[in-house]
Image 1 (tube, rainbow, N blue to C red):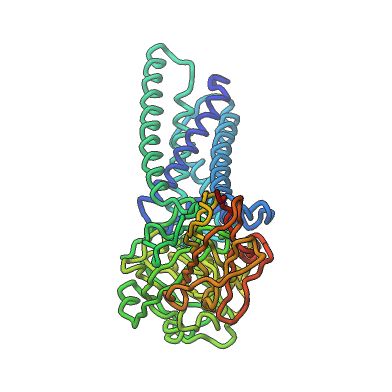
Image 2: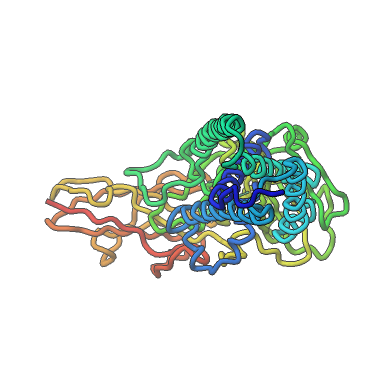
Length: 510
Ligand SMILES: Nc1nc2c(c(=O)[nH]1)N[C@H]1C(S)=C(S)[C@@H](COP(=O)(O)O)O[C@H]1N2
Ligand SMILES: [Mo]
């Protein structure tokens, strides 16, 4: 009955691989087309596996490579899925004993069902998204449809492609088959090229990581334009949340659950707040710090309206991209913790967490949750996305200062006066004093502080220097915060609770 081994193993593997490429593309393209809180299975897997990797391996995730390790992980997972797709092709080949499928329809249905059972009843619950994706942002119905559609596409390509790769048959059949094969793969390739193109366009426009080391020469703008504001996120591709369907839920340990649309949030009393954000993975002298004027609603207003139940200690925060974090309840009740919907007079841009993000002064950027959708008082200390990877849970901003001019490596002229200037920041503790040293810390001079931009903002400083001797000189800077505490000289890396040590530049004098 069966003509044995008329389809090669290689063809079977290739068909599985091609099917997996189509499926992966579908997952990514559908995510963009819908434009909201869909997490691809690849992201779901990396988010689940990343906290389980050895911490040192993952530390590089945002500090050393500026997100590159995360990108590598995403790519690795995708390659793994493609390989798995090929292996399933081989298994199918074995199951058919190398012969063609009798019924492509029933084979496709069976394969789709098997994969869907795995996806919806094993993969999603294990990765913490619930049976059928019941705890995803899009809910079980859409999550199930999304997965089933991807698996169906894979199965169609695998089974149909498999049957088309037969090498025997009548002359007529062989010619027809070749034509079909060409149309099938050619059409698939065209779709794939268009899809990849559009996805890369999207990725480029939503590139999520700022170059850490690049340091501008001279003082930055007092308020960083939105387009220049530093960007950090865990995502290879950031979510695009539709402001029209966005909702904020206040639930968990509250007496009355709240659900607010964007217009409802905007109709509440709001405040303007000038606030600097800094990433906990900003190295000494690094670029992951920016300042903006924000507008939003006090978190305490919402918590008071919902009525926090006794026994709550933390506020758990959840975002569209599956990111979670927490702040102590006490912190959340402070008047300057706000849900911001405006940044420098514009709606908060998508890459900075629009339509709504949280702002938590005096705490590193990680707790300033973007694309926030859920706020829940909880009775135990909740550890969020970065905390489970070893980063600080309190994440209080350390006092920092930087020299922004002269630029490192500049050549200066002896006996000619130059401006020395830079920034200093100590969260809500403010800056009391900045000192700089022309001789690598042997002597210190007080710098002039420029007018304070705001009590939660970075502070600019400047000084003049006339180098008197030729050779190289190393300049250092250090700040004292509003409590009178001098910035620590001890140099530590960003992991686990933020970098410390003095920033400096080396110049040559001729
Ligand atoms: N939902 C979500 N919020 C997030 C993140 C994220 O990956 N997902 N990254 C955090 C980190 S580590 C930082 S430093 C800030 C950066 O905010 P920005 O990109 O607007 O500068 O967002 C924080 N909020
Ligand atoms: Mo961060």
